[in-house]
Amino acid sequence: MKFTGYILAAATTTLSAAPTFAQEVSFSTGPAKTVIEGLIDCGSRSRPSAVGEITSEDGTVRTVPAATHYQTAPHAPDLYNACAGIEPAGLSDIDLDAIQTFDAGGTEAFTAYIFGDNYFELYVNGQLIAVDSVPFTPFNASVVKFTAQRPLNLAIMGVDWEENLGLGSEEGRGSSYYPGDAGLVMQLQDASGNIIAITDTDWRAQTFYVSPLQDRDCLVAEGQIRDSSSCSTAAASDGRAFSAAYWDLPADWMTAGFDDSSWPNAVAYSNETVGVDNKPGYTNFTELFDAADADASFIWSSNLVLDNLVLLRKTID
Ligand SMILES: [Ca+2]
Ligand SMILES: [Ca+2]
Ligand SMILES: [Ca+2]
Image (cartoon, rainbow, N blue to C red; front, side, top):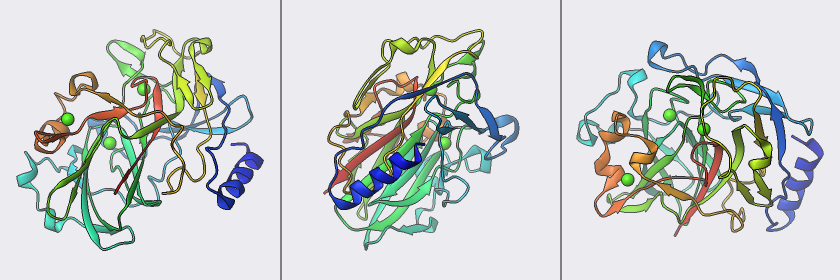
């Protein structure tokens, strides 16, 4: 990142309810250097959750697919995690009373159920509560119990992981450079089991890492508009020369006071579009994620395939 720019932004936001940190897009070309071979090892059941670094053309060292707190933050308790041998058939198979409760600085109790394709970090009222226990695959689901005070500001970092670091692609559909898709679904209950929030288009969503870009000119980047809808999502036989686009994360993006009013609204995607019908971490919990009276949508930014690091925000009174 531009170190001086970051300091200035932090100082500005401390002094006032500052406008969103103005950010320029920067690009890289080609693969990143692998710095972590895998955050977890689930053997043949998983793709390696590797982490890479690459210097973008503004001189900033970028961590791909994202700089995370996986190695330092609490891992979210598992609703479903084949890697850990936790494979309940449904919610009734889980002893929720035995699930730990995180303290987010209040006394009212809440329970969040989350399925992320592929990885999430959950902040409540500016505090990092827990991170997804499985960064890439197998697909898992999490239950995060916490106590907090209303209004609840929920801020989630969502990451679509990648095998080809910096290139936004993976082995799939007969190609070694297949751009995978993303999506995150969440349901939040109060202590009485009332559904008080679901993921929907009321959320705000902004992207910070777009890859692969077969042609940079397809990307529209104007202020908070980061639109890659004209860019190709086709698999390639060789994606090593493709580009990626980056924006710096505002230092205070997860705080309750962060002004997200200029961010686009989240876009909702169907279960069919995200492709969850073969993922028991989702299908065993449709009573939560597809509740008849409050059907949560998968949400993401405007490009489910190419946008790989997306920040999501919503405040609940
Ligand atoms: Ca995951
Ligand atoms: Ca749903
Ligand atoms: Ca992707």
